[in-house]
Length: 78
Image (cartoon, rainbow, N blue to C red):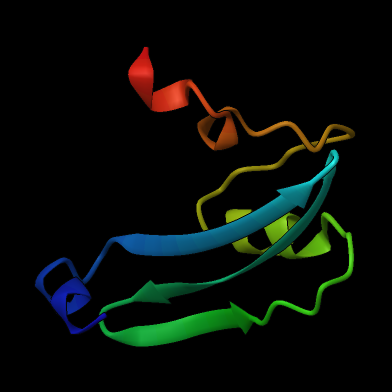
C-alpha cells in the first residue's frame, strides 16, 4: 500500500470476492496516499453491502443491481 503515496490523489480499492453456487461474499479495503480509508473484513455472510461501501470510494453506485462488470469472469479478456 505504500506505493500509493506515489499517486496521492488517486483512490484505490482492493476487492476480494468469494462465490459459491451464486452466493457471493465480499471484503476489501479502500486506500489513498498510504492511508486506509475503509476496511471491511470477510465474515462469510452473503451480502452486497461491503461491495457497495467500497465502490463508493470510486464514485460507483450499483443502484438496484449488484452487477459490477469488472467482477465478471471474462471481463479482462475482452
